[in-house]
Length: 487
Figure 1: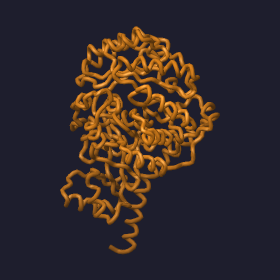
Figure 2: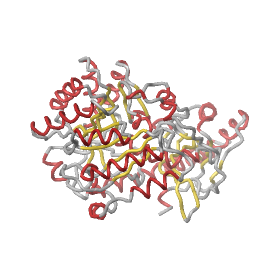
Figure 3: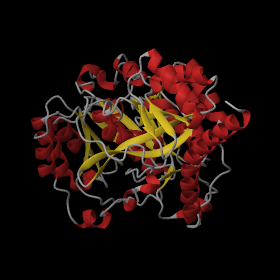
Figure 4: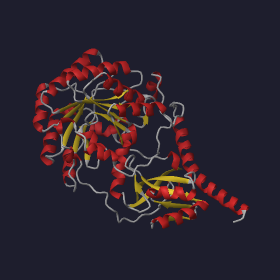
C-alpha cells in the first residue's frame, strides 16, 4: 500500500472513531447546558475521583465488599432487600399513599409522576399484590414505602398480612420515619409477618425527636428480626453522623444504609443556601432513569465512604452499606437488560453496570480485526458500512488489541433493550474509548453476595432465585443506531 493511501486509510479510521465518540459527547454537552440553564451549580469536572478510589482501597483492606462496579460498598452483612435490589431476582416496592407528615427539603417524591394524584388517592395495593402473584416468578422481597405508610397504620398491617399470605417465602420490609410507631402497632406488624423496619433519621431533627425515634427503634428491636436506619449523608454533617453511628451501635441496630445525597430538581435555593454543588459529570451514561433522586450532590459519596471507614476503625459492630444514586439506576438497567443478555452474539452483559456492550473497530482497523477474530474462532461479527464500524463481543477484545498493536483504535458501545411500537431494539447510549470504558463479563458481585451472610440470618438461597438470562428470539431492530437518531 502506498504511503499516501495508508495515510488516507488512517485518517478515515480516525475520523469514523471520533465521529462515533463525538456524537455522544455532544449529547452530554447539550444535557449539561440544559441543566445549568435551570440555575443549578455543578462542581469542577472530575472524572478521576481520586479520593473515592483511595477510600475504596482502604475499605477493601478493612474487609469491605466493593459491589456493582463501586456503586455499592458493604461492610458486614447486607439486608436481604439490598442484595435483592440489584440481584437476579424479583424485588418490588409498594406504597399506600404519597402523603407524609414530614416536610424534608430533599424529598424526591414530588418529582415522581402523578405525585399529587397519589396524595389524594390511595394506591391500589391489593390489586397490585394480586397482579404480582399472577406473575411467573415469585418475589424474593417486598417493601412498603411512601410517603409515610404509618399514616394508614391499619392498611399497613393489612398489606403485610396479605403479602405474607401470597408470598410466604418473601422478605417483607417497611420504610418509616418511626414517629408514628407504638408498641401495639409494632406487635401487630410483627404478627403480620414483617421482617425488617428501616427507620429514617434526619440530620436536622431536634434532640427530642431523635430521642423519640431511637426509643421506637429499641421497641422494634424486641420483636422485629432486622432493624435498620437508612438516610442520606449531607456533606458537612459528618460530626453529627459519627455521633449517630455510635448511638445506633449501642442501641443494637443491625445496620445503616448510608445513601448518596441527591437533588430532586425542585428546590435548588435550599441546596444553594447550604453551599452544595452537584457532581460533575452527573452520570457516566445518560439515560431516562426512573429513580426520582435525579442528581448526586458533590462530596456525599466521599462522606459516606469516610464514615464507613471511621466506624470500622473505631470498632463499631453494626453493618454499614453505602448505596449510591448510581446503584439505584443499575437496578433499573438490570431489570431491563438481563432477560435479554444473550439477545445477540455481538453483545455482552456487563455485570457491574448491567448494560449490554459491544466492542468496536473502525475504518481500516476493521479488516485486521476481522481476520484475527475469525482465526481465533469468532463467528459473530457485525459490520456497519455507514459508520465504518465493526462490532464484536467484548470477550474478543484481547485478540483485537493484538491485531492492531494497541487498544487506541478500539471503542466500547453501551446499550439498553428498549421498546418501540412493541418491538424490542438495542438502543445505543454511548460510545467511548476502550481505555476509559468499564467492563465486567463475570457476575463477581452476585458470586460474592451469594457466599455472604445476610442480616437476620435470612438464607441467600432464597434471594438468588433461579432466573436465567435466556437467549431471546425477539426481533432486533436499530442495532447500533445512536440515540440521537431515535428521537
